[in-house]
View 1 (tube, rainbow, N blue to C red):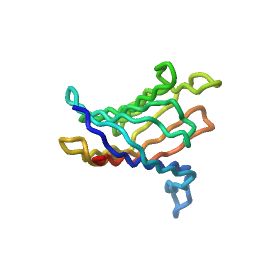
View 2 (cartoon, helix red, strand yellow; view 1 turned 180 degrees about the vertical axis):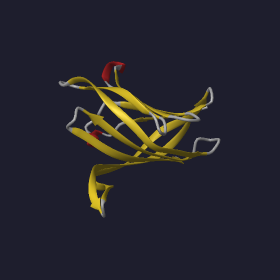
View 3 (tube, one colour; view 1 turned 30 degrees about the vertical axis):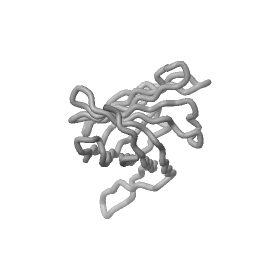
View 4 (tube, rainbow, N blue to C red; view 1 turned 135 degrees about the horizontal axis):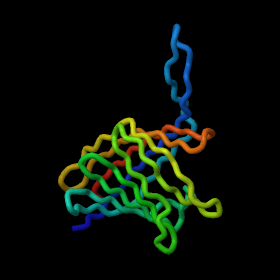
Length: 157
């Protein structure tokens, strides 16, 4: 049964760099951008997974776009659909796994992104309420690489 929910989605993008640390280097994260969205959606369970669906925010430039999060035991799958139900993104995040994701951008075309998931934790109850935290790195070409920390909070409406 679908339940109406309130979603608080926080996304922070970082630039990774290596900083000198004694005789070696350490990774440093510099906050580049952050976004927090409050939106309404639905949550439901189906075949050993929890699904969270919502409409993307116009402020994020994603009007007429729907997103579906599929939360299973070991993975978070993010499906994004644009007008005409074309899949714009199908990204699977699994801790310690490098996946290749196809991402369709209007007027640019389709590009392949490398996505490495550093960590994924889910604390959802039987009703689908709780939080999902994921830390992943997206890379395409040798020019673009960003680390993202995403938190999705699912609350009753």
